[in-house]
Amino acid sequence: LMFAALGDGPSRVRRILRSADVESTAEVLRALGAAIPRLDDDVVVEGMGKRGLRAPVRPLDCGNSGTTARLVTGIVAAHPFAARFVGDESLSRRPMGRVARPLAAMGASFEMAPGERLPMTVHGSDLEQVEWTSESASAQVKSAILLAGACAGVEVVVREPHQSRDHTERMLAARGADVWVHERAVMLHPVASLPAQDVDVPGDPSSAAFLAALAALADDGSLAMPDVCLNETRTGFFFALARMGAKLDAADERQQGGETVGTLLAAPGTLRGIVVSADEVPKLIDELPLLACVAAHAEGQTVVRGAAELRVKESDRIAAVVAALRAAGADAEERPDGFVVRGTPG
Image (cartoon, rainbow, N blue to C red; front, side, top):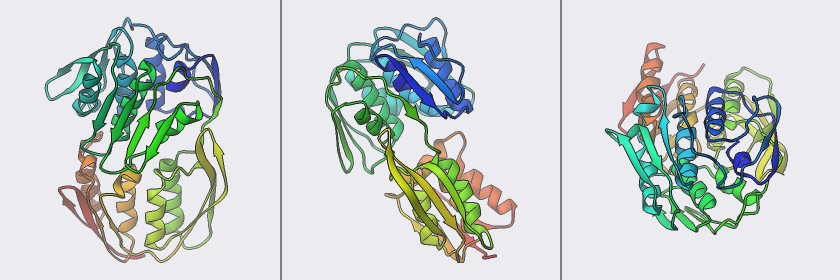
């Protein structure tokens, strides 16, 4: 929806997920003047151009969506107006300084609630190029910088300690932007325009993960999930599940809108505990609570390290998942940056 709103001309978007976060994004873009129709399985968005959005007459309510708040902050930072971002109680506890700092280095300015949180007012500007090194791997921060650079038409470079999700880079490249990606660094050269593009939204790997986990825990049979996004920065859970002993495979792989899409195949196996290291975490950050649940049924110990980011999501996901597993009778303990689950097969 963001790229469609910034595009030159109409973009057709099919199979969009009508979730609360996507609805929040649509409503925020409408408040910025974009003609986003009521979300349905097949919608057409008339693009405003990469600097065609207008000053909002009401606060931008991001609901519970950190993706909406952080990515649209990058877009607004490159426009010549101010916008006030608000969210629900949970989102208002999440840190925003990490996205404000690089955008401030580009020339935007910010007013934030104590603790660098929402509500937050963003004063956009004619941005300058930036070369930014993030302290942690965050696709939301990286995407905010890339979107700001694309809208402003300036070069940006982002470096991370580990590679995070790369959907934004892929969507920019699919629209003709000159994007250079090398391991943990991304460079975006100045973008003249963002052409309109029709998109078929693939199945979400985070949603497919729950079905794959059920297949892994089953007694027999197999499960096929067609048209799932198989972007390698999002498939960490499937690789972890395969390392645990489940049978995972992919078929009918193809390129679609810059993404690898295919049929995910899952079947049960004898599960055993594994160690998930810090460099793996960005590729399965949202699926780690699910991995902990699967680990409770695996033989031996599963250890997750380098996942402190889970403590600043909608809730403290480390504390929440360990408490839930213990309540269900599992052997689990918190670590400052992760958890340990000692499984009981069967």
